[in-house]
Image 1 (cartoon, helix red, strand yellow):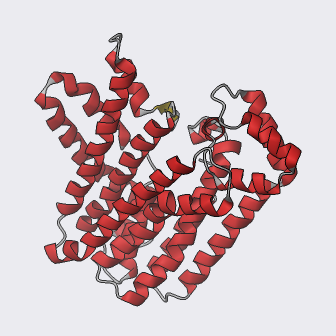
Image 2 (cartoon, helix red, strand yellow):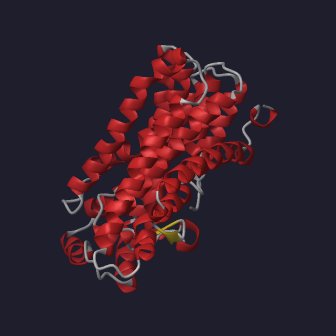
Length: 352
């Protein structure tokens, strides 16, 4: 299709949105048809995929094109399934973190709490229902992938990678939970980033597209060398935006990471650079559910004085350069190389 002979982000996003809109609307209708009480859950299934940059599907698509394959509607459907994986991860992540907002709107468990009204166990029920919405989204991702229309032989060779994606994503989420509140450590934080976000955002979508296309070992290795540092840079940018971004653009509260004392690389670098008194200040503030705007400004000021945000920017730059060098070595079809260059820029130089 001409719209993606060159990578035009809006045009590709519209293709993925059409696939997701039709598929999820049909599945939500089937869920709601079981019983009218399931209506609010069906609404949340649709809402979970209603927005997004569609980066994961784009990386999958251009992994396919990097292996020399032409445009394919079936591949777009397979790529769109990754947005359902992301939607499931977001629902579960917001539930684990008890985040109230995502993209400026109530998260799934908060919206379901409102839908449940005055019943005495509404909080617990809403959280349980949100967990099940996330589970359903993950199941739907597998369904869309399996029914995308690509030949069975193509899907068969990609199946092990699909299992690896789910396993490593869950491992990353578990590592974040296990390390939340622990002594900040940059290496530990980067491992969480790698498994919770970097792999399923960039590297594994690229590999999935490449493997579906029949990419050889050399190309797969090159795509990983490009994709993994780029995925880490994506999450490092997210860490900065989480604390210093504009909530009206990020759709998230700046206080979330501090109140939860999450193992972000930004916090780990701040801790590494801090002296004893500064660490004592951080210990008084981190993990406090009642942390307010004044506390946020105290932590931000400390981070700025220590130049921790600059250190994270340096880490982002180094990883983007590593990805660019890897891309230069791959000798890809020009359109794929151009698209992956554009995607690297949009994934790491963003404000939301």
